[in-house]
Length: 152
Figure (cartoon, rainbow, N blue to C red):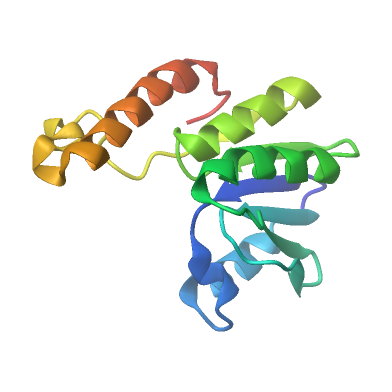
């Protein structure tokens, strides 16, 4: 185990289900780090420790609109000491939260990409106009955030 503490920003709510593959994987990741704190965009209202050094924090948001603001607020409370790194599940909303926190606390930011954001299907109207619009905005956000990441 190294001395690094990791703050992870994610949207994967399967972590709340005991025994889920996501939860098991996060406990395994926790063995690599001194501490692993995971903020999840969700409406749930609890914080829990899922292993000796892994904690999950739902944003407890009233609506999806508030996920980003609530995640930033939680992140500021977690990042109270030295030795943290931030990793974000995507270069979109999660990435924006991570970027804001990394900039404020002057710590490294890693952005993950799990989809082909350059594909024409990512913003295709075949997805429906609302999802196409959201993905277009996410693509613009990714173009802004990716050059600012320390690691991709």
